Image (cartoon, rainbow, N blue to C red; front, side, top):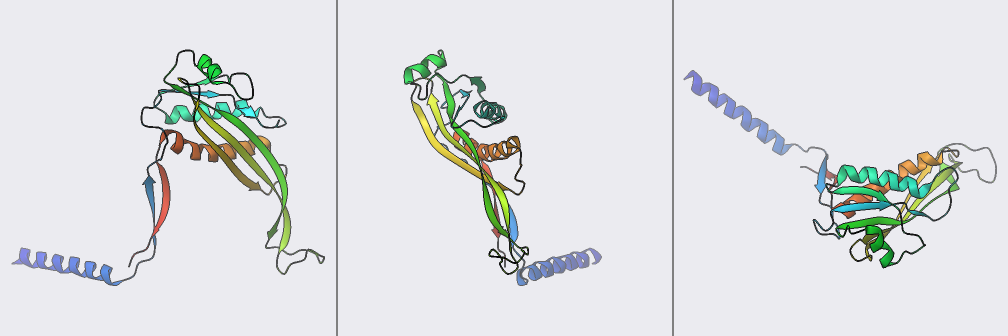
Length: 219
């Protein structure tokens, strides 16, 4: 009898908890979902990635932009790609011919070249913030004007087939970030923006999954 009574009490407690959960309204729940990467390349389409030194759209003082992006991407791809990743020189000329790319491949027909043109620019902009300004033509109630510097990284990306020497994929990327410090070092801005570019490139190039946040509404 005692065991049966205990079982009955446990059942009633479980029923009460379930009934209470069904009746009350819970707040939204933040969940993270793994989203499959969408790539234009089939699995196993290439066995090696050769990252070239990117052509620089415009010189950046104190930074070899093309070489820096090559070094950064090669290191990140070695962590994410199961095949071989190497660094190589871009064939001479603004637009190397298919024959030049095939010659640079040196018999590695299962490889692709990751190449393109990279640019990094900055622009000082005026932004509005919630702060008081002295009386004057720019006075807004409860608001003030501040200066920010906007850094922009552009990458005109090409994935070139070593077998044909022809581009297998092209895409233009543009990443921006604003900083309140007008003297933000160029190396710092490049590091920030290159990381954002990497986050967009790898799912496309390798089909790696991404993680996204969603708000789940419960009743």
